[in-house]
Image 1 (cartoon, helix red, strand yellow):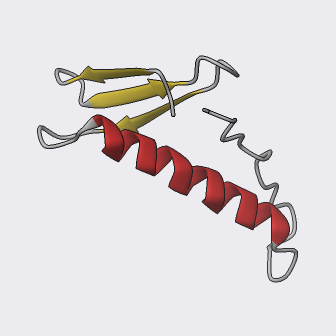
Image 2: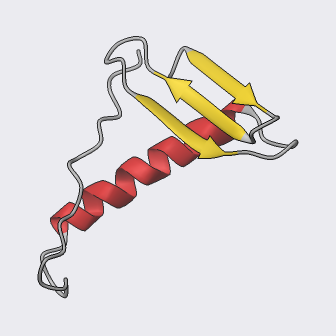
Length: 75
């Protein structure tokens, strides 16, 4: 699991960062957002991006999926 979580309530931004691979993830937060919510959104986004890359089907010409997003080994 990520080691560092940061919440900026003034700008409504939450960030998680990994101490192993040094990747980070930012998302919009609310007053009810907890660290686990930011982590869960990060994992969901990784899966979404990786699935886009795996789907070669009905993509528009010129569509360029992003690179795979690493979830690291947080053990």
